[in-house]
Image 1: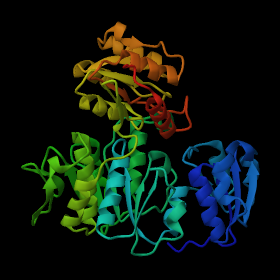
Image 2 (image 1 turned 90 degrees about the horizontal axis):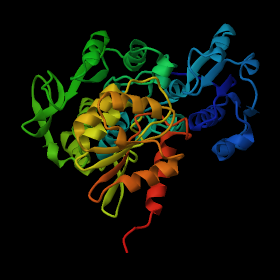
Image 3 (image 1 turned 30 degrees about the vertical axis):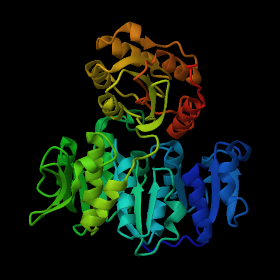
Image 4 (image 1 turned 60 degrees about the vertical axis):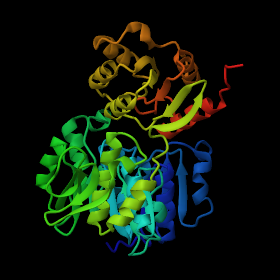
Length: 463
């Protein structure tokens, strides 16, 4: 896009991983960078290591952001800062352009940009898409909301490189010229209403991923999602689809048990659906989304098939932790909304103790609780966090037995210990909270890591 930040005054608001990476990127491009966070340097600690000693960075930590805005050319905001927040409004009043790290990185990136958003499945889809491009011999960077900042690679990419970027609705609030060659929306379900307030606003944020695309670009959408069928009408780009249950006019689907990429002219087989190592229909849908993107971008069918057969899944997504005393422990901490946890519940085939609850995103848990009752395999529900009471009320309303609902745990360790005590041999303990983690943890990865550490530290009860 030809953006030159040399000599420009840029303030970074929010010193998480993406903010630190953005500060380093800008300093290396000659910008005069001011970093700011409500936390002090001591509170932020080791996360600041990549920018210690870097020239061109002014540290203004533990100070109010609005007082630091005068004289800035650009404000780069963390995904945790809403676009409607007072500090962003103040920036606009002062004529300071407010963008996010994803927008900044896209401006400085030289590689081909493939971008994925959606309520569920985007991390698995992003990871698998990256694996497909790697199998095709491309230098591939998998970045974004997946946990590795786009800014960490944006200044180093070459024109032949492929950047596969997971993008959240929070990040899409602050895009302007963000322009992926291939964009994908995996699905749209109720989520993050505490931030976006209404489903209409949330869906509109997701649609921003393709708002700058032209007829030369490609948009990949889930054929089974009515909201995305409607969204396709707004697209200027070529729209192709994916579906595990239907045959769209063009895209990736299943034909006689075989994953196929089909156009009006031909159907190209890749591999049998049963060859996938990642279980469940939702993971088949993720694989089909990845196939549609990669094939649309020119990857050969045999390279895509190689990656599909080899892919073993993503950490914290229905991840097997261990088996102890005949009980299987599964980490699905990335189940941060009701729809995601419904899929986890539907995958359970043994008596299961589920750990539910977390920070309140103003979501409705009715359909999830109905799925728990319908499943017949959820033997107990151990409730944690801010939403514990909401889960109890909803479970009871949907007919789940009160004696199988447990609040006994005073903390996270207690919840896991209680779950172990309730589990039966041949059964499962499933961490799939259906909520964000910020009431108890820094992020959902920490929630999953602690779960795994505790479970791996357990010793057998058997003599």
